[in-house]
Image 1 (tube, rainbow, N blue to C red):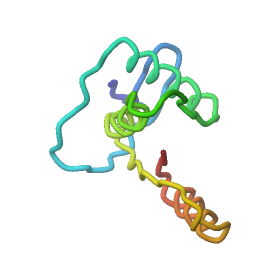
Image 2 (image 1 turned 180 degrees about the horizontal axis):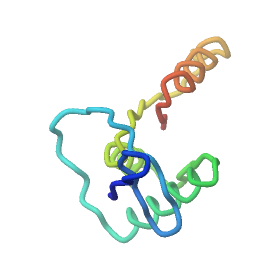
Image 3 (image 1 turned 120 degrees about the vertical axis):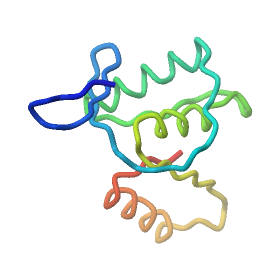
Amino acid sequence: YYWDYEKGDCIIRQVNASLGYGYEYMGATSRLVVTPLTDRCWITITGAIHIKLGANPAGPAGTGKTESTKDLAKAIGVQCIVFNCSEQVDYVMSGRLFSGLAQQGCWTC
């Protein structure tokens, strides 16, 4: 975390990525334990966001993909909404979800 005196804003730098802090308050919750795999995941996600791309962590169930993404969003100050798809989810519901995400600047996983 660095303070940019010219912009008057907090920025986050990780490797070659530079992101603005989101200032979204998520409450006083516990944080995830950072492991080397979590660290690699965060570096990949922040690098993708820096060049205006998305990220889609992939792997077996129960390995911490969702929790890693949620904790990175918390560290950056951005709200992360978990959305579980099922057969009942249609294109209208998906469209409303992505419309809301785009309007608010939230992440989803």
